[in-house]
Image (tube, rainbow, N blue to C red; front, side, top):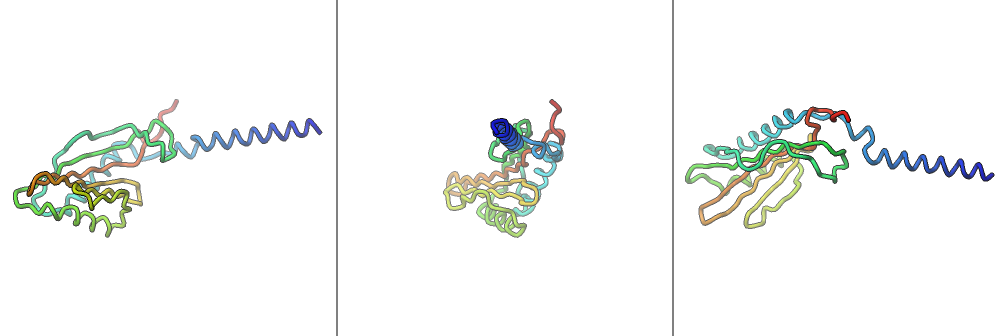
Length: 172
């Protein structure tokens, strides 16, 4: 009887260890993804699509830190070693350009495409709206900085979900 209880205890401990191991990075966490280059192309695509919604004359000027960055977001439950791609643009517009139309036009466009709102701060003095394409997890945001009367800075930022840089995890 004691041997049976001991064996049951060992089996239960092994089962718990197996469950804990699978919850912390099992095979399902190391599935292939698009490459960082493919992710960068998709980020650029969603930014260009947003740009096309703006009134004529708006130009995109690269801004800030862009490129491949470590994906250290523990909330997605995925394994370490992945990256995400981010691209930032300042929207440069000619004089008398209707800057106040940028955010509403983009919000309407993203709503029509069924993008999910991630962060809606449109009621602030410097409004911002961040959305995610539910089909693939790519995000885009627009931020409007109201400087002085008649002076507005607008930024578009796109980012990918976490991906393996080469599409599969590095063997280790």
